Length: 61
Image 1 (cartoon, rainbow, N blue to C red):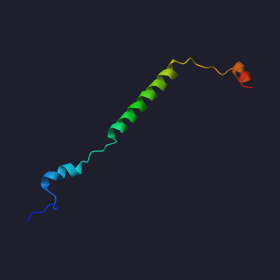
Image 2 (cartoon, one colour):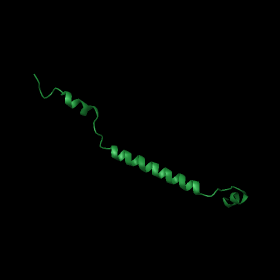
Image 3 (tube, helix red, strand yellow):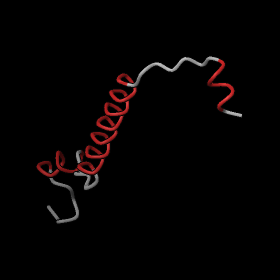
Image 4 (cartoon, rainbow, N blue to C red):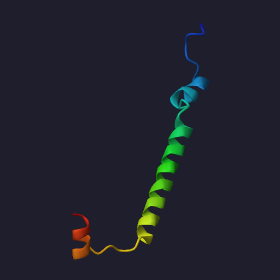
C-alpha cells in the first residue's frame, strides 16, 4: 500500500541538495572582497616609498 506520507525514490535527489537562496549574495560579497583587496594592493604598490628620517620625526611632534 502506498500513501503520500512515504518518500518516493524519485524525490530523494532533490531532498539531498536543497537550494540556498543566499548563495548569490555570498558569491557577490566574496567577489567584492577580492576586488577591494586587489584595489588596495594596487594602490599600495604604486605609493612612493616613505623614508622615516629626522624631518619625519620632528613633523610628528
